[in-house]
Image 1 (cartoon, rainbow, N blue to C red):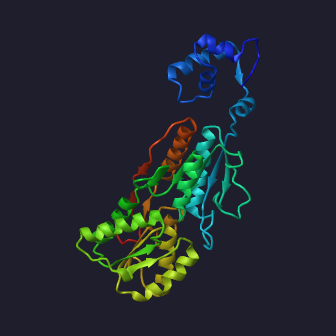
Image 2 (cartoon, rainbow, N blue to C red; image 1 turned 90 degrees about the horizontal axis):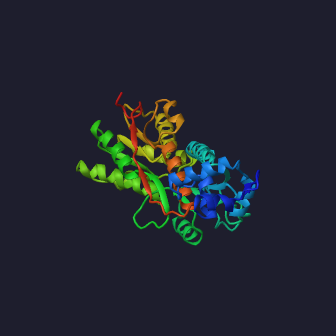
Image 3 (cartoon, rainbow, N blue to C red; image 1 turned 135 degrees about the horizontal axis):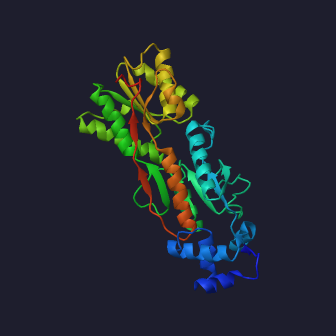
Length: 340
């Protein structure tokens, strides 16, 4: 547990502090399970005794790897990749935040229940916990995995009845805000582009419907277009949809990648954005500010999300049961909606 530089042992430190050896171990590791005053007192005793932590021995004794597995459970048969800008941003934040806690990252795009997967780092005792970035169509699989193994935090749609820890954006509120913004600009026939089979997208559809209902507008099912995330598929799906113009004068896209694909098809058809059609996306990926027209979008607080996911996983690893979190979203107004 410790590298001994004097004849004093960890047991001696525990006796001097009047606590157990496990409390000494937790205190010297900075665990929040030990009261701050107790941590400080134990640290002072250890420092005066000229002790330093031997991390390798400590990790072996505690059966820790100081590694977290980050899994992107991307659906088979899609062109969506971990190189998706949203995933890249999230992975960068998680890596930084886990590093602050002294953890390394192992990344995978295959879920542990995938039969063709060579092996899950967590199940193979090569990681101490798991962060799933996205639920996709795997909600029941994630629930079963979390019930069986614990030590799981998920980025996704926070819903009543979840019995595992989820951190996610206010998808309903963000979509309601985006749709309402276009309605306030005078658009009345707003289309929805997204995959409502996915939990987060289903919540965004709920927010879209809420906004229309609040303005006494009907939901036109012909303007609800099942659109996948990857940009090539999104272009393919949204191309025939463009032929419905002028039955629509606005588009709420469930991601910025879908918004970019839709704008490309509109431009190819000679339909102007935002003059003819307002477009609002979701995510606020970096490129959304640099395409033409720049995309009005719902900003997800990725840095805060990463920090909260890591914070909650650390709590689980220390024996806690943290609550799920819904993070507020923000509308970023740019050119594609026509407000400028």
